Length: 321
Image (cartoon, rainbow, N blue to C red; front, top):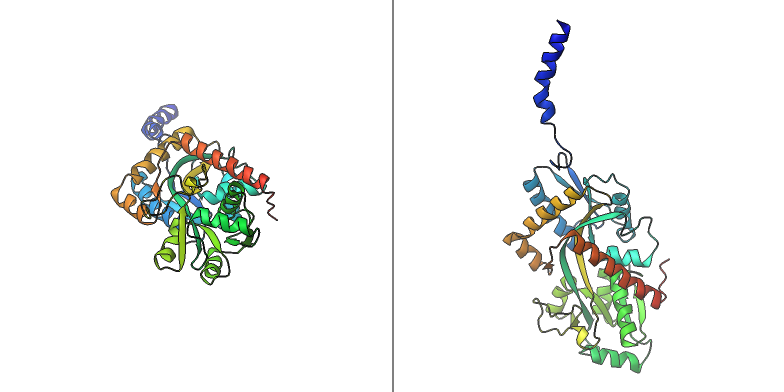
């Protein structure tokens, strides 16, 4: 009798067992956290806060944003690198990730410890100058710098930042020598350029646009290979320095070793979200170009950016203390 009851109980439990959630096929079966290495309210943080609710709607589980700013994004990146590779800890990165990986020894491997999902957007940099500087083109700025070596100065948000490396790449390709003045943030640097205390800065088009349009500073070149739809009047710097290309980006990744079917699913879902007319409008208005792609394409982009900045760091003998 006991054996019969046990058999009946097993049969009754069988349907529940066969319908248990598959952690990979049914992903996600619990909330997913997206680690953002930025302070809340910034342009990159804005992007991930637009995407997360859409992923929640599509996949039926909450995508929670966890801000972990500091050390050029390394604090958040290290957290993700050390997480369980199950697809439940994601990372949202910008060009700061590749610059930091090229400038300092990180506690994680920037390539091996992450599985990249897709690039979200790219942002062209723009070369800006103080209003009263006697240079209105890239060629004129280069001539001015060569006329008086180490007299011109430029600001950045810190040694080893993309903004710093963009200027060092400029000096390298133009064969000029200018003086770097690092700041703790872009606001202080921009204030000093508006006030005439620094001569030029490389900035994201997103951050520079309001000040350019208000005539507080002047833009003389776009740093991407193509002209920008937002400011089509700006010539690409590559017309004067062939091959010069500085474009930041934002993208999503996961802990290295995460199941490939989950990476593929996240790529598909993110691309579906990014195809929304509303998302395209918001990201374009923020100054970005939509750049969805495959995991392999993002991996290649991150790899190439790190290699490019490592060459600049080595050639210019940049040391981040």
